[in-house]
Length: 229
Image 1 (cartoon, rainbow, N blue to C red):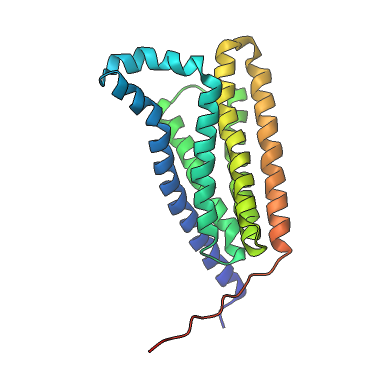
Image 2 (cartoon, one colour; image 1 turned 180 degrees about the vertical axis):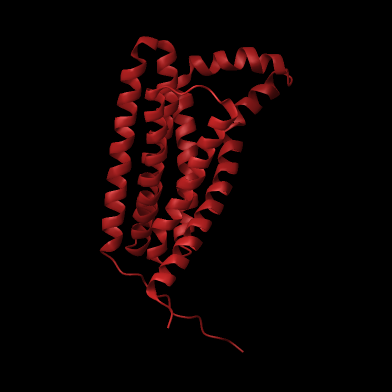
Protein backbone atom coordinates (compact mmCIF):
# COMPACT_ATOMS: atom_id res chain seq x y z
CA UNK A 1 0.00 0.00 0.00
CA UNK A 2 1.32 3.47 -0.89
CA UNK A 3 1.84 5.66 2.18
CA UNK A 4 -0.53 8.62 2.45
CA UNK A 5 2.40 11.05 2.70
CA UNK A 6 3.76 9.80 -0.64
CA UNK A 7 0.38 10.38 -2.28
CA UNK A 8 0.22 13.87 -0.80
CA UNK A 9 3.71 14.63 -2.09
CA UNK A 10 2.78 13.41 -5.55
CA UNK A 11 -0.41 15.51 -5.54
CA UNK A 12 1.57 18.55 -4.41
CA UNK A 13 4.27 18.25 -7.08
CA UNK A 14 1.76 17.65 -9.87
CA UNK A 15 -0.46 20.47 -8.61
CA UNK A 16 2.40 22.97 -8.46
CA UNK A 17 3.56 21.92 -11.92
CA UNK A 18 0.07 22.31 -13.31
CA UNK A 19 -0.23 25.74 -11.71
CA UNK A 20 3.08 26.84 -13.23
CA UNK A 21 1.96 25.71 -16.68
CA UNK A 22 -1.43 27.43 -16.49
CA UNK A 23 0.12 30.63 -15.10
CA UNK A 24 2.64 30.81 -17.95
CA UNK A 25 -0.17 30.42 -20.49
CA UNK A 26 -2.19 33.09 -18.67
CA UNK A 27 0.73 35.53 -18.63
CA UNK A 28 1.34 35.10 -22.35
CA UNK A 29 -2.27 35.98 -23.14
CA UNK A 30 -2.28 38.75 -20.54
CA UNK A 31 0.86 40.41 -21.91
CA UNK A 32 -0.52 40.32 -25.44
CA UNK A 33 -3.84 41.96 -24.51
CA UNK A 34 -2.15 44.52 -22.25
CA UNK A 35 0.06 45.48 -25.20
CA UNK A 36 -2.94 46.15 -27.44
CA UNK A 37 -3.24 49.88 -26.57
CA UNK A 38 0.37 50.40 -27.66
CA UNK A 39 -0.18 48.34 -30.82
CA UNK A 40 -3.33 50.31 -31.69
CA UNK A 41 -1.47 53.57 -31.00
CA UNK A 42 1.33 52.49 -33.34
CA UNK A 43 -1.19 51.56 -36.03
CA UNK A 44 -2.89 54.96 -35.94
CA UNK A 45 0.49 56.74 -36.03
CA UNK A 46 1.82 54.88 -39.04
CA UNK A 47 4.01 52.60 -36.89
CA UNK A 48 6.16 55.58 -35.94
CA UNK A 49 8.34 54.29 -33.10
CA UNK A 50 9.36 57.79 -32.00
CA UNK A 51 5.68 58.61 -31.42
CA UNK A 52 5.38 55.51 -29.25
CA UNK A 53 8.34 56.63 -27.17
CA UNK A 54 7.29 60.27 -26.78
CA UNK A 55 3.51 60.65 -27.22
CA UNK A 56 2.23 57.31 -25.92
CA UNK A 57 3.60 57.72 -22.36
CA UNK A 58 1.95 61.16 -22.17
CA UNK A 59 -1.34 59.64 -23.29
CA UNK A 60 -1.08 56.96 -20.60
CA UNK A 61 -0.25 59.51 -17.90
CA UNK A 62 -3.27 61.65 -18.86
CA UNK A 63 -5.52 58.59 -18.61
CA UNK A 64 -3.73 56.72 -15.85
CA UNK A 65 -6.91 55.83 -13.93
CA UNK A 66 -8.50 54.15 -16.96
CA UNK A 67 -5.16 52.53 -17.78
CA UNK A 68 -4.86 51.15 -14.23
CA UNK A 69 -8.38 49.71 -14.42
CA UNK A 70 -7.61 48.15 -17.81
CA UNK A 71 -4.37 46.53 -16.62
CA UNK A 72 -6.05 45.22 -13.47
CA UNK A 73 -9.07 43.73 -15.24
CA UNK A 74 -6.95 42.04 -17.93
CA UNK A 75 -4.67 40.50 -15.29
CA UNK A 76 -7.66 39.35 -13.26
CA UNK A 77 -9.47 37.80 -16.22
CA UNK A 78 -6.47 35.88 -17.53
CA UNK A 79 -4.95 34.71 -14.25
CA UNK A 80 -8.15 33.90 -12.39
CA UNK A 81 -9.78 32.49 -15.52
CA UNK A 82 -6.79 30.20 -15.92
CA UNK A 83 -6.95 29.23 -12.24
CA UNK A 84 -10.67 28.51 -12.59
CA UNK A 85 -9.99 26.08 -15.43
CA UNK A 86 -6.97 24.50 -13.73
CA UNK A 87 -8.67 23.66 -10.43
CA UNK A 88 -11.51 21.95 -12.29
CA UNK A 89 -9.08 19.38 -13.69
CA UNK A 90 -8.09 17.97 -10.28
CA UNK A 91 -9.62 16.97 -6.95
CA UNK A 92 -10.11 19.53 -4.20
CA UNK A 93 -6.97 18.60 -2.24
CA UNK A 94 -4.82 19.66 -5.22
CA UNK A 95 -6.36 23.14 -5.59
CA UNK A 96 -4.09 24.79 -3.03
CA UNK A 97 -0.99 23.39 -4.76
CA UNK A 98 -2.19 24.67 -8.13
CA UNK A 99 -2.40 28.09 -6.49
CA UNK A 100 1.16 27.69 -5.21
CA UNK A 101 2.26 26.99 -8.79
CA UNK A 102 0.74 30.30 -9.89
CA UNK A 103 2.56 32.02 -7.03
CA UNK A 104 5.88 30.42 -7.99
CA UNK A 105 5.71 32.04 -11.43
CA UNK A 106 4.81 35.40 -9.87
CA UNK A 107 7.83 35.19 -7.58
CA UNK A 108 10.11 33.99 -10.41
CA UNK A 109 9.15 37.03 -12.50
CA UNK A 110 9.97 39.30 -9.56
CA UNK A 111 13.38 37.69 -9.04
CA UNK A 112 14.13 37.87 -12.77
CA UNK A 113 13.37 41.60 -12.76
CA UNK A 114 15.64 42.12 -9.75
CA UNK A 115 18.51 40.25 -11.42
CA UNK A 116 18.01 42.18 -14.64
CA UNK A 117 18.10 45.67 -13.11
CA UNK A 118 20.58 44.88 -10.29
CA UNK A 119 19.90 48.09 -8.38
CA UNK A 120 20.98 48.66 -4.76
CA UNK A 121 18.18 47.66 -2.38
CA UNK A 122 17.30 49.73 0.68
CA UNK A 123 15.78 48.27 3.85
CA UNK A 124 12.38 49.69 2.83
CA UNK A 125 12.65 48.05 -0.59
CA UNK A 126 13.62 44.78 1.10
CA UNK A 127 10.32 44.92 2.98
CA UNK A 128 8.45 45.46 -0.30
CA UNK A 129 10.25 42.49 -1.87
CA UNK A 130 9.31 40.35 1.13
CA UNK A 131 5.66 41.35 0.73
CA UNK A 132 5.90 40.63 -3.00
CA UNK A 133 6.87 37.07 -2.10
CA UNK A 134 4.38 36.51 0.72
CA UNK A 135 1.30 38.01 -0.94
CA UNK A 136 1.17 35.69 -4.00
CA UNK A 137 1.78 32.67 -1.76
CA UNK A 138 -1.41 33.63 0.05
CA UNK A 139 -3.43 35.17 -2.77
CA UNK A 140 -3.14 32.54 -5.51
CA UNK A 141 -3.78 29.49 -3.27
CA UNK A 142 -6.62 31.52 -1.76
CA UNK A 143 -8.43 32.16 -5.04
CA UNK A 144 -7.67 28.61 -6.23
CA UNK A 145 -9.32 27.03 -3.18
CA UNK A 146 -12.13 29.60 -3.23
CA UNK A 147 -13.00 28.84 -6.85
CA UNK A 148 -12.67 25.09 -6.32
CA UNK A 149 -15.20 25.42 -3.51
CA UNK A 150 -17.40 27.40 -5.87
CA UNK A 151 -17.17 24.65 -8.47
CA UNK A 152 -18.23 22.04 -5.92
CA UNK A 153 -21.25 23.97 -4.61
CA UNK A 154 -22.50 25.26 -7.98
CA UNK A 155 -21.26 28.79 -7.34
CA UNK A 156 -18.36 28.60 -9.76
CA UNK A 157 -19.18 31.65 -11.86
CA UNK A 158 -19.80 33.79 -8.79
CA UNK A 159 -16.47 32.84 -7.21
CA UNK A 160 -14.72 33.45 -10.55
CA UNK A 161 -16.20 36.96 -10.83
CA UNK A 162 -15.28 37.77 -7.23
CA UNK A 163 -11.73 36.48 -7.75
CA UNK A 164 -11.35 38.54 -10.93
CA UNK A 165 -12.65 41.61 -9.08
CA UNK A 166 -10.22 41.18 -6.17
CA UNK A 167 -7.31 40.47 -8.50
CA UNK A 168 -8.19 43.56 -10.55
CA UNK A 169 -8.01 45.67 -7.39
CA UNK A 170 -4.57 44.27 -6.52
CA UNK A 171 -2.94 44.62 -9.94
CA UNK A 172 -4.78 47.76 -10.99
CA UNK A 173 -4.06 49.28 -7.60
CA UNK A 174 -0.34 48.71 -8.10
CA UNK A 175 -0.36 50.58 -11.42
CA UNK A 176 -2.46 53.37 -9.93
CA UNK A 177 -0.10 53.68 -6.94
CA UNK A 178 2.93 53.92 -9.24
CA UNK A 179 1.33 56.81 -11.14
CA UNK A 180 0.07 58.45 -7.95
CA UNK A 181 3.62 58.51 -6.58
CA UNK A 182 4.84 60.20 -9.78
CA UNK A 183 2.35 63.02 -9.18
CA UNK A 184 2.86 63.09 -5.39
CA UNK A 185 6.47 62.02 -4.69
CA UNK A 186 6.29 63.35 -1.13
CA UNK A 187 3.61 60.74 -0.40
CA UNK A 188 5.75 57.82 -1.58
CA UNK A 189 6.04 55.94 1.71
CA UNK A 190 2.48 56.44 2.89
CA UNK A 191 1.11 55.46 -0.54
CA UNK A 192 3.16 52.27 -0.56
CA UNK A 193 2.15 51.43 3.01
CA UNK A 194 -1.52 51.95 2.20
CA UNK A 195 -1.33 49.85 -0.96
CA UNK A 196 0.46 46.94 0.66
CA UNK A 197 -1.80 47.03 3.71
CA UNK A 198 -4.75 46.60 1.35
CA UNK A 199 -3.01 43.80 -0.58
CA UNK A 200 -2.11 41.85 2.54
CA UNK A 201 -5.63 42.19 3.97
CA UNK A 202 -7.10 40.90 0.70
CA UNK A 203 -4.50 38.12 0.40
CA UNK A 204 -4.92 36.86 3.95
CA UNK A 205 -8.69 37.20 3.71
CA UNK A 206 -9.08 35.22 0.48
CA UNK A 207 -6.62 32.57 1.71
CA UNK A 208 -8.53 32.00 4.95
CA UNK A 209 -11.91 32.09 3.21
CA UNK A 210 -10.84 29.78 0.39
CA UNK A 211 -9.17 27.12 2.53
CA UNK A 212 -11.92 27.08 5.15
CA UNK A 213 -14.75 26.92 2.62
CA UNK A 214 -13.06 24.17 0.62
CA UNK A 215 -12.44 22.15 3.76
CA UNK A 216 -16.18 22.23 4.50
CA UNK A 217 -17.21 20.38 1.32
CA UNK A 218 -16.51 17.01 -0.24
CA UNK A 219 -15.39 16.25 -3.76
CA UNK A 220 -18.15 15.26 -6.15
CA UNK A 221 -17.34 11.93 -7.70
CA UNK A 222 -18.25 11.97 -11.38
CA UNK A 223 -19.82 8.68 -12.55
CA UNK A 224 -17.82 6.91 -15.26
CA UNK A 225 -19.16 7.26 -18.77
CA UNK A 226 -20.68 4.05 -20.14
CA UNK A 227 -18.66 2.26 -22.77
CA UNK A 228 -20.54 1.97 -26.04
CA UNK A 229 -19.47 -0.79 -28.37
